[in-house]
Picture (cartoon, one colour):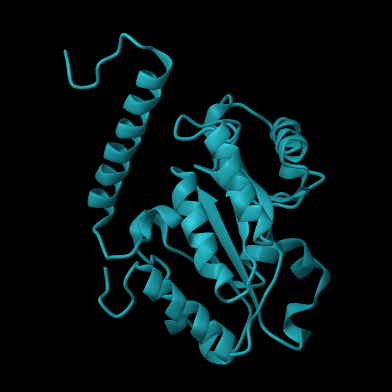
Length: 250
């Protein structure tokens, strides 16, 4: 982790402040498709959050963005072992995020389906998952992102998520500079050091809220702390639902 760009909320605030000072407009993904990015009066920032592990961390990131009155797109998984969108607490957290004005996206896990799934098959499954989100949260799912993308996804076919766009389309990877904090590091360089930022060109930034917090912590340490928190919540839930369970007894 670079001390110049810590994975902290203050570090994230600094990133947002620098982007705003440079004149960036925070845009929804479908809006960017409609624009000629090269001729846009203001450079666009497509701020994207793939929620892999924890809804509470996503809500915390959304609150930081609310300080600046900017909107991002939050991508949630329907098929995951790590959180439940449809639980009482899960639904509450997602609605808090959406009520701050953020956009709803589907984070589609390709590994949840057969390895031989075709383009048409992925589109069918993505449509089914997106409709579940739309029905439950009464918001449109504007776009799809992929978790653990299959080789077929990396080809970028528009039909993969038809009728919705997806984040691997050329409009979001070839026509615009892309950076990501995957695995808790900036593998494509920090956004503020990119040629796109220096030149005032549009930029697509993928942020995973799980890596961010009040203090800078190594990614592996962060994951262990997350697991400890989830185990404590699970113990509490079991105790609430089964009176014979004694958390401190074996």
